[in-house]
Length: 589
Image (cartoon, rainbow, N blue to C red; front, side):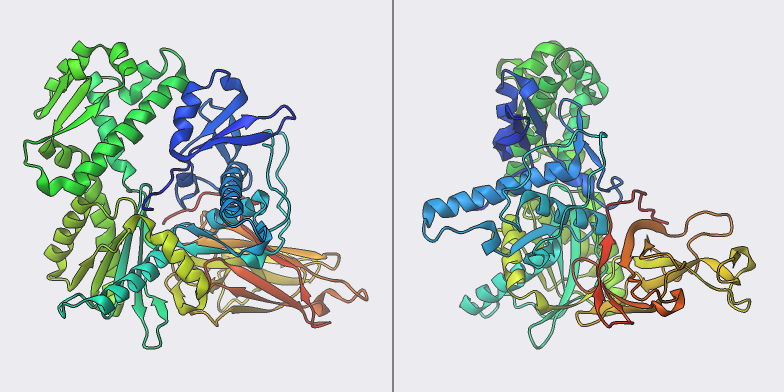
């Protein structure tokens, strides 16, 4: 198997008001286009990019629009996808291995996520997994909450340690290293590449570019040596370039005339079939065989008949003639584009953005760790021969000859197979670089030698001057954190006597050295992305100053975790890093 499934899902309303999955993956779009009673169905596709760090504001109330334009809660739609995959997997086991009957709770589950996602996107995947029933005997989500009617509660965390989130480029790196070592061991040729030193994995999928750099230690463990980096210029950007070109040909910006002329949903499906199926096939063929194309060879794209009927073949033919190397043939409904035009108009604009992102990652890594010995190319787009050659040329042009440029076997499934390797030995990754600066906002005793008068306030209950808007930093962006390290916050006391729960804003910025959460003009220097919620017992009605809690925050894993201990009793108290109850955009300064 060497394929990936798109995150298209078609839900069907049941008589009891609930929903069931009618179709998933590549076929869902086609099934939806043919259903008679469309009011009984809800269709979504390409929703993963909504959880990218800078793309959208992500919280528990984040909406996602169906093809009909109706809004639903994103976390619930993701949960339906996860439930479908869980049920499909368990059903497959029952058919192939009927005894003993295995349940969801018999497994440890791994969900892979891009390393460039911030804690909010990761937390949404975890909560979606809880809703999907991956960790309980409950079958999982079966209905959609009407959007805006009520706020979604945080799901109960049951068997949380049986779910781990794996970072996709790290999984790809482990797979690439493992498969390369096997190839080296089996190679008769002594000149077979044997990577040494630092290496970089370029995980280039349909939606994102995700880059990690690692060093393998003598004991076989791995250290991540770069801050997670990347962008959203994955392979579907080539599809978008074709979309822009075809819009110019038919002189219809964003296809507004076509979409507004009839059944909007059905016409959008037709467009997506053209852009993400018909053109996708030709894109993959060209990308994998570009070296066999002469400059004047052509790529043929079949235009759906409903699009031809709307614009008219004469309009498409005339529009195509405006461009050298493009021709429309009415008899076959086919748009022919010469390979040179495919390169320059469709591929190169995208690859330039990818190359720029890669160069930034290389520069920042080599400045600290020296030369990179090996590059691995993985992902749905990363295995493209055209992309491989383009990036090889760009890298060698800037940095000189590179020892190894490797596309491992099954680059499309490197993440999935690497996730299995990672879950077996998650401690093999012994260090990571923090992706951002994290901390909390505190009010502390004012020190005129340290603090600016701008932030001086008077606390009536404690009868002393405090410094407001202090950014108490846990970790700085780029810090290397070992797997055994955790940040300790000692002696936190409630601000007021009656408090039994403390909430601290978790703040983040991509800058280092930030002292205050707001500048002198009142503008935020760090963005609230979550809350640290700590239970503070009040056994024996002790004074506020005696009810101290020590909190440890762990940044060494793939998610941020916290623990808290009540000093009075020595017992652990409940603490939650809640990244979905707030909503502010992540700001890049």
